[in-house]
Amino acid sequence: MPDALIRSRVIISPDELIKVKKHLGVSSIKNEIDASIPAGFLAEIGDKIFDFTIDINQASHRQKEYSIGRITLIGDGVAEADGLSEAMMGEIVEIEDKTRGLVLNLSVKSAGIVILGDNSRIKPGDLVKTTGRLLSIPVGQEVLGRVIDPLGQPLDGKPEFLPQKFNPLEKIAPGVMARQSVSVPLQTGIKAIDGMIPIGRGQRELIIGDRQTGKTSIALSTIINQKNEGVFCVYVAIGQKRSNIAQFIAVLEKFGAMSHTVVVAASASNSPAMQYLAPYAGCAIGEYFLEKGQDALVIYDDLSKHSWAYRQISLLLRRPSGREAYPGDIFYAHSRLLERSCRLNQKSGGGSLTAMPVIETQAGDLSAYIPTNVISITDGQIYLESDLFNSGQKPAINVGNSVSRVGGAAQIKAIKQVAGRLRLDLAQYRELQAFAQFASDLDERTKKDLNRGAKLTELLKQDRDDPMPVERQVVSIWAGTNGILDDLDLGKIKNFENHLLAYVERHNPEIFEKIAKEKLLSPETIEKLSKIVRDAKQVYIQEENGD
Ligand code: ATP
Ligand code: MG
Image 1 (cartoon, rainbow, N blue to C red):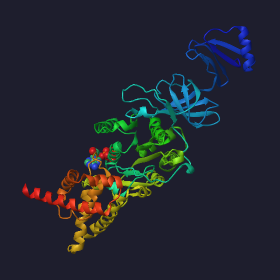
Image 2 (image 1 turned 60 degrees about the vertical axis):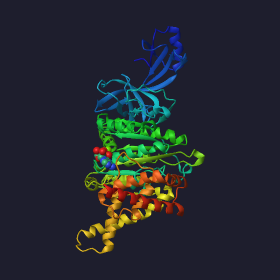
Image 3 (image 1 turned 120 degrees about the vertical axis):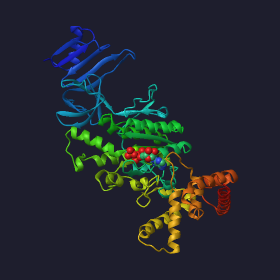
Image 4 (image 1 turned 120 degrees about the horizontal axis):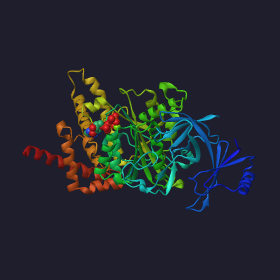
């Protein structure tokens, strides 16, 4: 076996070969023809390839150095290779048939690789080489409106884009000195959230609940509402059914919300590797806007399926497993992802990246491993409940168990003014409700509080694709907490709310404008509001009686 194997398009003359031998510092050399090389040559020494080929299009020497190895084991989307002495953790490797893989395990003699793509043609003995590149994804304005996979390949049948820039999937989160505290609201358009569990730009707010409790719908509503808010949205679908993803995109298109949104999809039929990478890819796209000083929102739907995918990869790679068979670094996998969300200070551009991870619980169990992990990483959670959902309370938010630890600082004053009361009234209602089930005779005061609570709860119901601008929320909640709804039938609340908002729009639209501009309820505005709400109610009752 010669020390070096030289591959070239044509046989190299003996004189030239002696020069090459000297240059490479080897004692013996062999020359083979390889028609796939355009010009120049490849030198294979031990487990390394030195690339001296010439790119004819650019007339330049590549002069690269690879490390090579051979596949020793392959199956279930995971391979093991020997050699690859220079491979780095997280590096992309290329297998003989051009399939790419990602190095996720390294030991002295071998490397564990997850295959990114079709692995049916790969067999033991195939050549693998390092590329010197870490995994990255195309980013930029041109990805808006697109549906892509975690490697940046289009899934929507539209042409491939020519990205100006690539962002690495893994990146260290911005340090403390580059950050500032959350102070600008991220309006979801959902009354119950914006009123009582407010989210700020740069915050990480978890959406948690059992299956089919409206988790995705909250994300959908929030994305639709960003149309007028100037926040770019990245929706990451992990391990979902393709039909669900298609449905989601169809709704976004219907509301014209795709123009500020990019969907990164790794469906249930994609490999666990793709599902594992999806949230990091989504985050990398969001970071493009963050770094440009803009505001972005990333939704990870959902991180439970992400954990399953990561668990599967780790078990296949034969990493030791921990609690519930999840890999030991599952907490780190999620915390390093969510730490990348932040609000940068002015010196660093002032951009923000808000994260809304979604977690699916089993039978409402918040104390399972993955839910507790993610609860502890995020700045609060929106807790959805099956019981509420089934009883028709949609969105099914359990206000008592939901919190936002930093969003209050970002809430505009007007909504703070009206929602403080709302929170109190509802808390009282919950307490009385439990007690009133057993009592037969209730005093007037209790009856009144129960009635108010029921009306407010009804007021907080909202359709999944019907986000409401904050100034309208203020008017609506104001009416509720000031007893305007108390003597209306439960079934008429929604109707009355629509009537009220239309009435204000028609007669005093400046109230909305004032709230939106001043961001607070001044005594004059309250006076005006008080009058018009009562007028609207009178008209409503007259119309009702007239029918
Ligand atoms: P999964 O666990 O399957 O991901 P999910 O928790 O994401 O479910 P969704 O898909 O958002 O739940 O919602 C479940 C169903 O409830 C959907 O058919 C949706 O249309 C309906 N739904 C959700 N929110 C509302 C709402 N506010 N008003 C009316 N219907 C709603
Ligand atoms: Mg869902």
